[in-house]
Image 1 (tube, one colour):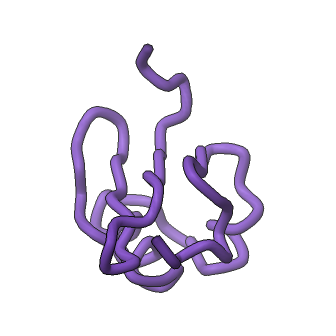
Image 2: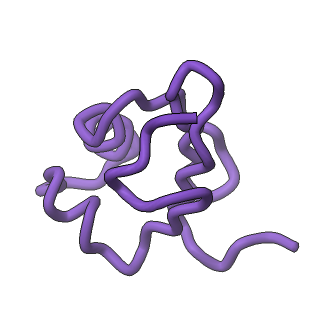
Image 3: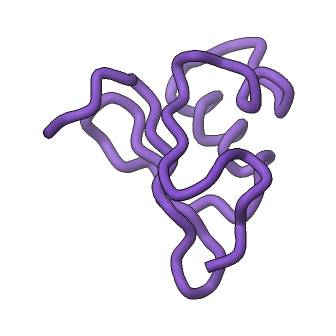
Length: 71
């Protein structure tokens, strides 16, 4: 089933990185919130910071929330 959320952060991989998808495109592997912030800025979202990523209803966290980076 496809997600209705425009931003999806997948569960941590064995190395602790989390794949990030914006709309239908994977934009990279994040190893922390600042990586996600940068991916979103590159995707055209302005005024995004780590607090926005933690709190936004546009982000779907799979396999743990914004503080979960261990496999």
